Amino acid sequence: MPSEHLALPQRSGLQDVVLHLFTHHSITEPVLIPAVAEPLLVMVLSGSAIVEERSQGGEWESVQVQEGDFYLTSTALPYEMRWQTRGGDTFEVMHLYLPHTLIDQASRHLLGSQAGPISFLDISGGRDDLVRMLLEQIRLELVKRHEPSSLFVHSLAQALTVHLVRTYRDPEAKGRRSNALQAYKLRRVIDFMNQRLAEPFSLADLAEAAHLSEYHFSRLFKRATGLSPSQYFIRLRMDRARQLLLDTDRSIIDIGMEVGYSGPSHFSQVFRRQVGIAPSAYRNPEHG
Image (tube, rainbow, N blue to C red):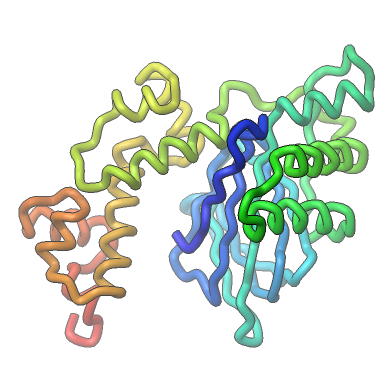
């Protein structure tokens, strides 16, 4: 996936905030947007593009976006997105999941100590100078500073959350989705998977990383991604294999071993089932 996951400073009190930066000219392989517990805030940082979205297996819907546009959504189902840049620009997008601890704190501050859980309106292609400024400051602090200030990041996140509750709270919504996987736990599990692509799949290890029982973890993970943990693990293996096939001249046997397949025939069989063509044809389509 063409993204960078930013670890937040230790002792920031924001370890459950998840932030991604996507920078690319075009994305042809869809990016999976999981359905997690927290609302997702997306800001276009630079460039313009035709962005397509669809529910898994559904029809693509497209919209043109440009620098400064933002989205706010709380999705109950995972969906996919891809984009085609306009004018050859680099397209940079920031995804931020804010935890319910911050949202509840802002809600009690603004609405009173007895305020219950809140939900947000769905915003598509909105323009908000304050949202844009606060997100940009969070990005600059985490990306550009050699030693980011945890106090500054925490203050920016608090200010952002207060503004979202003030401006985009849905007065008609009753509570929020419960029993959903938290974004930081999903990120931890996916990082765990990526670090162990050459190793056998272990549901027990993944559930332990998420601090959940195997049964509960499997249910929440599939609800978030649309795939079982083992299916998602295979998808990550094939993503890595595709990258190595295109970006290196390593042998197909070596690539298969790096993503956990000691036999070339088994690797080729799984690759063909997932991608649609054999590894050799994927590397050299003109000879496929």
